Amino acid sequence: MGEETRSETYAELASVGPYGVHPGHALITMVEPHPGHEHAYNRWYEDDHYYAGAMAMPWMYAGRRWVATRDLQLLRRPEKSAVAQPVTAGCYLSTYWITEGRYDDHMRWTVGINKRLNRDGRVHQDRTHVFTAFQDHVATVYRDGAGGPRDFHALDHPYQGLVLEVIDAEGPEQRAELLEWLRSRHLPGKLAQSPAAMVVLFRPTPLPGDRMSYVKQVEGVDDRLTLLWFLQSDPRPCWPELFAGREAEVAESGLGRVELVAPFIPTVPGTDLFVDQLR
Image 1 (spheres, rainbow, N blue to C red):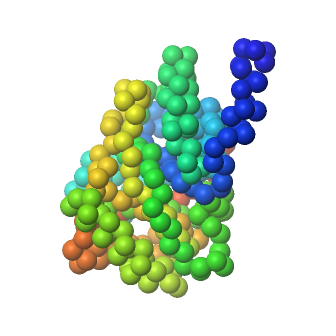
Image 2 (cartoon, rainbow, N blue to C red):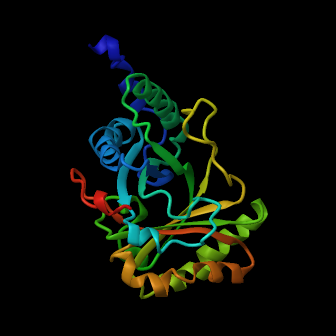
Image 3 (tube, one colour):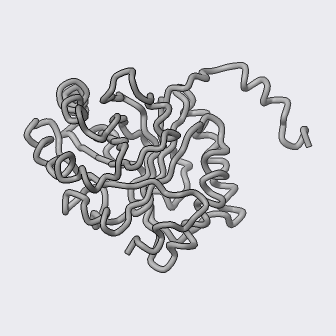
């Protein structure tokens, strides 16, 4: 068996390269199961793909799934989104952390394993990728400084809500300005005294040319920022005060435009909780 799986190379690979805990990269994937296939999709993803297509891979060390029930979908902004058409599309979100400096190594494995899963009939086809992108970490802003969980804890800490925000700048230079404004001037004030413990910011990276055909190439590589707001409470009560005005707040800066603000709550692994609340 060792010869078949080339076990002898594992010790060699483990002895070289970065192996810290910082989430240098992420996979953020928002997916819409096709109508009538919600239950089958949920069971496939939880029972097989979350593990075989994600967590079992090298350097992908933390993951969590999130869901937007219909009432949460209806809170999303803006009405006309460059990310989701309609803006309510994409009721499941999965987030994964990848060890800093290991993106290329992970991508080689993920492309190979997904080709194998597809060949073996272990890919659920009745779904649409609404927003799927590997991302590079660019900043984390904390509400409590060193007094709370770090970003590498975020997918294991029992946060009760997550808000996915996508902001587009006019170009690479403007994106750098937008990032600095968010990190230094805007987000610290938004987080203070709020249920949001941290915001983790990323920029998307292009998918490899040998990616699976059903995953479209990433948009906004040069001008987009992706923000993950981790909430200690359900997003519904704090939505009007904290998130309903996001379009106007960012527009006022003159540095970018909000293309999606979408609230989610965590799934309960091993159950079909919320599947009947998606439509």
